[in-house]
Length: 89
Image (cartoon, rainbow, N blue to C red; front, side, top):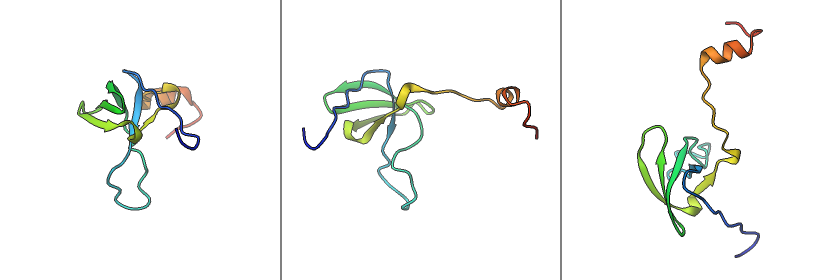
């Protein structure tokens, strides 16, 4: 390994972000904010599935970024109003 490189050992079922291959402009984020789930790993070759659309992609491990702490939570409008009673529309 070179220069503080870290092994990215992904396992099946982990959540990752995919790198944006085509940036529209310089303000476009480097990684797509949509959730993807790892379905298959063969060395540096990883298959991921988009959680929203179900579309499957094959990417090199360099183009993936692990989601920290796997904190995924869906927030409904009803939940938000119940947890913050001071905030009113």
